[in-house]
Length: 482
Image 1 (tube, rainbow, N blue to C red):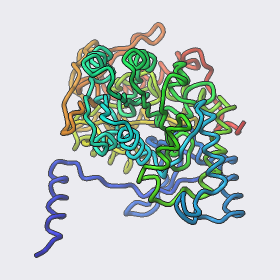
Image 2 (cartoon, one colour):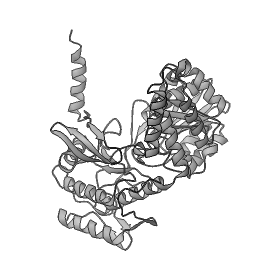
Image 3 (cartoon, helix red, strand yellow):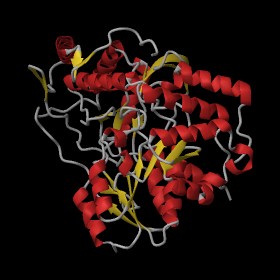
Image 4 (tube, helix red, strand yellow):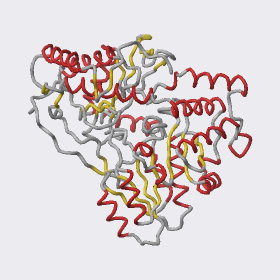
């Protein structure tokens, strides 16, 4: 029997559905982010990365690199074992203290990744509460869904950010039954945020625990980088805050922050914590350095928001189908997996712009998109080049846009997956977004020649910048580290 046939057939199905993923071989350049080297089949090429989750560029910060190098030189590279067997190194203990302080909690517990912290954290917490009922947002990340599944507890899925539906489910539950509400504070594909205080109001009213995933918000929101919970003034109201060290903090690992009793119980019962090697000391020291820096420096957060606002404004002005939100995520709607892959292939091969296509199962079928993540170091010239490249790619068959009404607003897209979680990959279908007010000019998608549209967007950019939301633009090269 040829067992490889099973795997070849599975891969063939992915290719037929245009869902086969190709990884780009990238070499990031410390001190030059977002510039990188793409090791293409034809040889190395310089590219600009527009989809990194190193949101603030902290992976290249001198303090972070310095902490890692110094610790590796002093303590070596590996942890030497699990947390129970020689792996609880001092930089890891220091990191957990920093995380507990960041979220104003009694304790924190570090895991090997954000995925593991959700999968293990949710399942262990729910198992430790007899007859626990889990109430999960329909758009929660796969790691949270797996945590719910592995808990083997009863689950009820509430419609995304629908507080009336959540209250209905809470009201129908036994008042004396343990209940755990799990949700994300910022949803990374659409870029929308959770109404945290309203969720906490319901949790208090119906005596439920709250578990908030801050993976795409921690470091980037709040006066000290405590995430959307801090930004919305709800940190003290959330029972468990989960986060990552691999995005805004530029390192690796995940964590939960909660009461001392809860963290100690997860430490003592969670297989995903007990039976795996601890994070190495250099990683822990680097992450702690990033957290300490972002607790006191708001420069990166402010610059990041200003860059994201400018990217959205320029792409809107160019008539591209940007899915609107109030956060740093910039999704550009495509709606077809093959076209999405073609667009990103053209951007990379012809323009040196790397954006990974986002297809099913990350988002529902029919809601495929480009997910653009500006950083503090994407300068004006790079943003202009991105807009020009996207316009050029969008003009090509079969990606060319159809004629649209300037004020069209397509309906939302909702589906369900096999876990009962709703898949709502985006609020907008293939048509372009509504025309937006940009000071005195009304900029709407048109069907004029590409050069005319490009000229219009450039004129608008000149006329209506240098201010976005009252912030002054940085016109210089990458700023000096504060």
